[in-house]
Length: 424
Image (tube, rainbow, N blue to C red; front, side, top):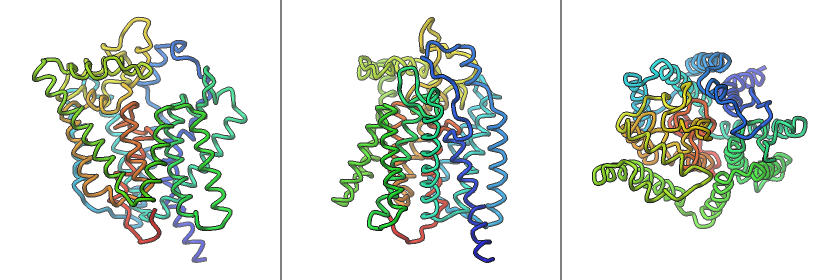
């Protein structure tokens, strides 16, 4: 009887995390549409879909929030205080204050409220589990389920699992989404393999199979950024385990240095000496295409200049029901996009120079005092999230998969107590 009660309590504790992972990974909403080329889409429908809200989405997150909050107080969950936590709270307060100058105040408020609900639900769900090994196992088992789910979808609904170019998209709208899901799944599975590599069990064979399967799916997605990061991850893991180096910390310091230099210092220098916010950016990236990203970045920089310090308001630039002026170019694919393909530029567009400073401080305080508390797989998911946002955009995008896992990294370190079991 005691064992049954213990198992029931554990199931109740991990259920919010499992349900949230299912939601952000698209388990509840596989894309059952033929993937056509971008220019064959209907512009009005695309704008409506971007700005519209889902009743199921709202009901789901409110329910998860209430459920995780109740469990938090029942099981006496706790989390420690840190500078990173305070900076995180301050960033959210600033996003809320941006409603004052947002042209889409109501929409900004709805998106801000959803973001707060997501963050608090994640804090409460991790705080009540508070077990490093259990969280790793739950996340791994979820990705094992997601692998089976995607394979089933590919086998029986193949007409929806590939786009018009023959690229694998799985249950998602595009190859890039499948790409970064596959990268994170590969990192989690490979880390689990390294924990079990000296054991002889069926479970270990399952881990090997899932690791290889996710890597194959990643290759089939043909997402160049994600494939490159997967190889980079394996290289860093190999070097770290052979030489016991701090290569991951050096990489994060390099990323932070680049973000601060390129997105904070360089624009100010450009504006001060040339009077043109994007002058040096055009010199550096003006001739780089990267499948159209160069043009998107250039237009984003010109749009940033209009509201340089404060931005357009949280969630008030993309997906508001109309085409941003800088991207409203007749007969251009630019009218269909809903991101600048750069998370740091999108932060600029939403919360401006000041908001990006606060976000950079959050990363700095987290790396300084909290990053070392993360298990190895979350350290590299954190690195992946930062690199991913140089070519894609997920920062502060409520339930975006990469942003959700970046939140797990940020929240994990002050919600999970270290128990002293095997670390990787």
